[in-house]
Image 1 (tube, helix red, strand yellow):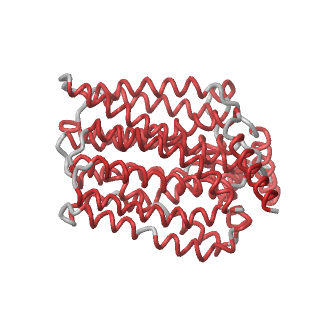
Image 2: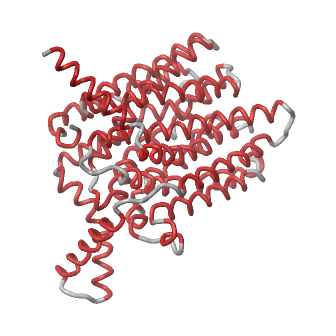
Image 3: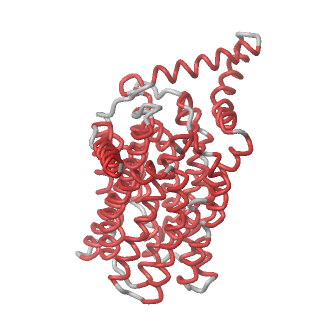
Length: 462
């Protein structure tokens, strides 16, 4: 019996690992990188740019409100799911047409950033950052849908593997992109380039172009079936309304495009359970967001250079995240998504306290490395379980809309609350130790909600 159990476990592990090397996973990896890279621009790069240009912690924290658009993208997700991009949709496919259009706007904003400085044009800098955030949040609608549609709807193993690879891709875009940005900015500053951040943004624009070249090789699946399902729903609604006039067609379009995707979520889960699911999603990563928003400012104030941050937070953090995200995909499938979320949530809170220790110890590279590794380990497990959980909840007829709704609810909690992170540090008079302890406590409400739901989510989470 022991040998049989061992063999089954070994076979399961082997099959799961093999799924990481399928061709579709390479596509999903690239999609994740495209999704994660803009966060380098409006996250760590913009924050450090503002810091080095003389802005306060509070101002940098409030500038993070531009991330709020990620919490609102579900409002226009139905239109992205239905409306076609002229010319490009016919030539490239519906999803890719939207992504490439939005990437072109992001590239234009990067080139604009290369011509201005926060000290003299703060409103313009933040305005361009807001446009990047809007484009990034909008392309995420399509990227997430395209990623989910690469996997058969009943393939739980493939979905868990895809979630892990997508998270690896996101963190690769964020960590490697951030490492490149920090190293390049540090090098240009060292050799005496006055506008070193502006020149860095021009170089980052090259990465945007390269990602879009790779995007052209990703096929789209399920487009006809999805369009047919949406069309049938609209025709059924029009028939119930008893007419074929322009007004009826408009109302039926709005109803099936905006209302039906939302209603199908509550129809599947029930209103009470649906609301509790949304509450959990809203609360789960608030503490992580508070910490993440201020982390690079914390590193700088402790005394680490941009190169130190690039090596430990970006380079070492990326390696850790990749390894443990891939392990996390297996962990989520073996233990069940709900249990994986509970365990990783507790770990995520515990590792935040390591940054309090780093504050108390001071500029210590070993402690920095330990804190980053532990934090990225917990975040990797939590994120892959979180993405798998949301992916399993969506209705394939409304993939983009429902995933955007669920993901944006989580982003809403992170961005609206975390924008006050700088003000909290200032209110604590720069006591980073207490700040990180507070971020650890923030995960508790989400875990209480999830514990209450644990027996009601087996059909979604496996």
